[in-house]
Picture (cartoon, rainbow, N blue to C red):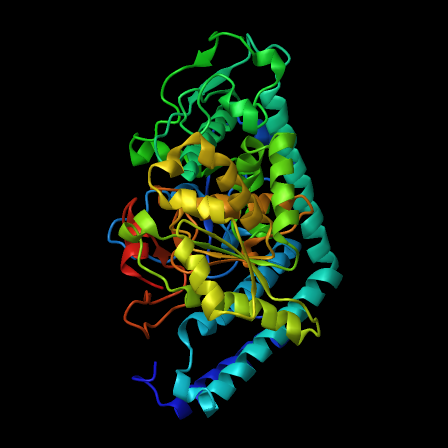
Length: 521
């Protein structure tokens, strides 16, 4: 940054930016550059279609920027069956969505300053450093004001209640499908969980089975006997609760789809069906949640990952023994084989966000011990953080880190208990900092969304990725629709000419390429 602008000019730019953001708060205007689109399922037999809070059965017109051309030469193949927030028509829906967009803009600005604008050691006493301090304080004031608005605004409270009801409805629907009165004759789908790769790969295979079954109104019958983390007939039930009721034990294969799922080697076109949301929940998710797919997948993953009491006790025992207490920031830092798949990120990149979290608490007058939980596959990471950040209490699962460091031991069933401690404590944290290129972190984020959804809350702003956005492995999400134009300033920044442009990832490996090459980061 110093090579492009003088410190004096940068100070002026940042100050103007903060004043501009303050005006955004006052005026109710928002500057988020993108809007999420979700894809709507055409399957009328989906058991979730009956949910009646909102409906998207009739065509709706955009309320803001009109759609523009895609950034790709070929028109988007999914544009005809997507729904985004420009199509919201109700005043309350648009009010809640714009408030969420404003919050996202403020959070995005804060993360930008934390990640990209750091004075060097000899600049720490300069005007640039002082301006950065004040800029972050302005943003903390805005975040505090947004929190007050959300707590006192009746429309925002209605939104939370609607999301709580939606969560309960989805959970009850899954429970009902997985516990049929007559499992022998009920329509079923067999899920063969035998993925030879990491924990998250297996979890997301099971997720795909459940999404497909929900779309078809079928009961998932899970066969995990060949899964290396829970082998054998009773391998799953030693750690997790069964996904079906006792009535499905030995129910046979009558009316069952027995082949094709999860199909982790299937073509992207087939796997991309996981993006199809039931029409009845698409609108309420887009209107009331900042990351609709993470919410939807989170409800399902949290059902799959229901723990046995003995597993829960092991996690609680670890928390007591290690001193895991709130408030706490959780870091997931992958090394080892991940270095071939994604670019290296120094521990300071993660800790910058932990510093900001605790600085926000101090800004509000709270005096708390700075505490972090570190989950990693490299014990040296824990040692490095303790050395470089002595002001923090560092909690970690040393045994799990050592086991994960060994490429052979990490895939054994004995490693599962340590992984579950890590993933659940990541999900339980007050702030999650990780790289979404890692499937392990994406599962933790999904579980975090499910935890907050119990009370109708949105966990999106509790998670920060140091590389790519959230995605489902090897399936590009629907295109993002630009709300405003964007002129490129940095070399690795996207550029588009007008509102309404569709920003579409080029292929199913795009997110991994972005993570490896540090594109758009």
